[in-house]
Amino acid sequence: MKVLIVIDAQNEFSANGKRPVPDHLATIETIEKKVNRVRKERGFIAWIRHFNKPNESAAFVPGTWGAQFVGSLGPQAGSEREVEFIKDVYGAFTGTEIGSWLQQIGADEVEITGFYTHGCVSTTSREAIMAGFAVYLDINGTASCAITHEVLGDISADEVRRSALLQLANMGAFVYSSVLAQVAF
Image 1 (cartoon, one colour):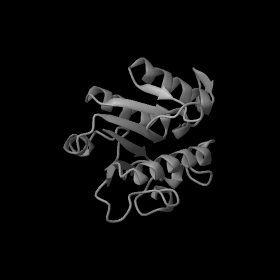
Image 2: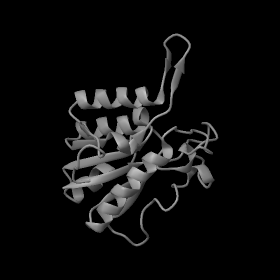
Image 3: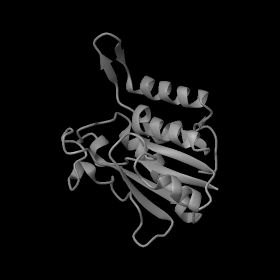
């Protein structure tokens, strides 16, 4: 059984957030379509929300607009098939009960969506692979920011995303485009 994992679909990544992502709205639209399909099919959704630690930046602070899920995203009230997990590190499996929850419900595959592809999505994907789950990633359901380094140079947001997805595909994740092909989610 495949479970949808939505990583950090929070306002902080929007144009008005402290960590804006160029393709935020298009990525959110893809995530919303996946969520709607899973809900219609009575599937399971793991909602991951990031909160920074008190000594970290002013982004992702509990109780702020930036830490809230975007629009209507987030677990449906009263749903036993949608669970929220709070993390304060890159990987959703570290310090949460998501691994045991996935085992409890009989999951053997996960589709991971959200933000940043090169950070939390990549780390969670690697954790899922190491835990024995088949991992699926829709290139349209995840996004990154550009990265600049004084020695290594600049890399665009699209190249950051592409590089992270290439690395995950090399590790055994199934990377596809929902625009080009239809998969269960």
